[in-house]
Image 1 (cartoon, rainbow, N blue to C red):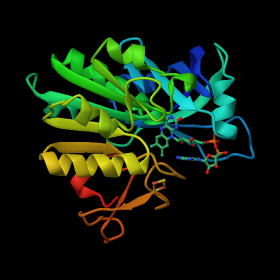
Image 2 (image 1 turned 60 degrees about the horizontal axis):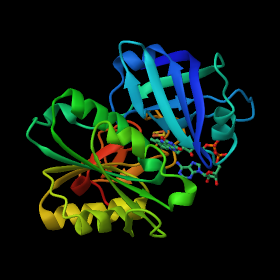
Image 3 (image 1 turned 180 degrees about the vertical axis):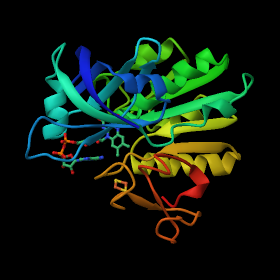
Image 4 (image 1 turned 135 degrees about the horizontal axis):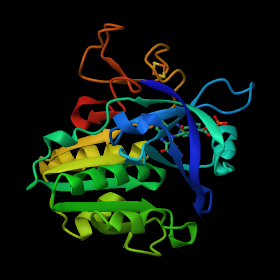
Length: 262
Ligand SMILES: Cc1cc2nc3c(=O)[nH]c(=O)nc-3n(C[C@H](O)[C@H](O)[C@H](O)COP(=O)(O)OP(=O)(O)OC[C@H]3O[C@@H](n4cnc5c(N)ncnc54)[C@H](O)[C@@H]3O)c2cc1C
Ligand code: FES
């Protein structure tokens, strides 16, 4: 894990309240899809870093992409980043998705809801590099008016299906509805998004007998396993606290769906 003074390489607004920032940082060289970084603000009043998933990685160039929604001070400050600005970033943190276990003939289904889609872009990119031919990405949005951010980027690496809450594009409904409507077949699911969506995916995977890995983007404080502010109930007993808990920041954020109680 590295504490890096990362330099903004590119910064753009993707749609309403959604921004993308590419950083030059040595963290990129050891980062894996599904891991996250803690981004410090420049304000003394906001001491804790903000956890943001790594959306895409250019290892050789030493560059990382973060895609985020503005909700408060930290994400607001990051959305105003200009080329050359510097941010203290700690990472890579967490475990990431288990992509080295994916054989080229595996049918992979990526399911991303809203701001849960960004970490799956790096997954799609990596799977293409690994020679995995069948990758479907089902992306859920509120509606076309709010922007189908990253959908075009996903098309470079996967077959893209859209689901919208208001029916303005793709399937009218959830990402699970889109999988059913399009009869998408899969051997493994990688997912990230709001908790109700992840619960529905856990159920879908159990019904179809598919292994599913879900990334939990809940609240965090320290980000490095020290405060127990991010625990989730799991089947596994935690070595640190000796209860059926896992720390999302260190044992996660990616868990096998059947291992976690959500
Ligand atoms: C492992 C992990 C990965 C994440 N990856 C991303 C990502 O790739 N893109 C992205 O946009 N966001 C991501 N998040 C959420 C992101 O960390 C929060 O949106 C961010 O910390 C908010 O900071 P802020 O200073 O802007 O808002 P604050 O001023 O801290 O909070 C403003 C409002 O946002 C709410 N809020 C804060 N954190 C969260 C959260 N985690 N989930 C829901 N609501 C929250 C608060 O309750 C409050 O109402 C991730 C979170 C985790 C734990
Ligand atoms: S955020 Fe502190 S232990 Fe996970």
